[in-house]
Length: 141
Image (tube, rainbow, N blue to C red; front, side, top):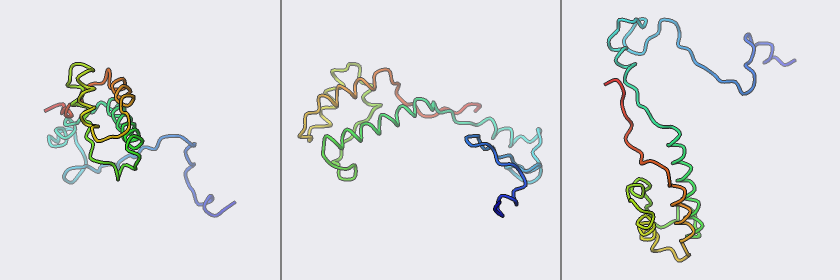
């Protein structure tokens, strides 16, 4: 048995379990002294939270990674060497029809020498049903 395993006083959590951090008793975030229920500053800080739609953000991130991958193939280069191509998903979502969205995408890809029809069609299919990302909302103000 190794020296490191004999020095451990608490059993290790099973693999795949979550780790939670608990503050030391009586330690507060604001000011000095313990957190009390009557502290108005602490109450206000607890109410001000920013809400993000994590599922929508994750879908957006996956889509953006896919777009970069596809543009790398279309332009035959790495992301760093790629010409300046701006595809704003929110702008596309503001456009009402798929035909107008396709025109907007084709205008962005005007410098691409490879056919872009498949990319445009796939991207339009992927953004269908997505929502425009709004600024995070603050609750409790």
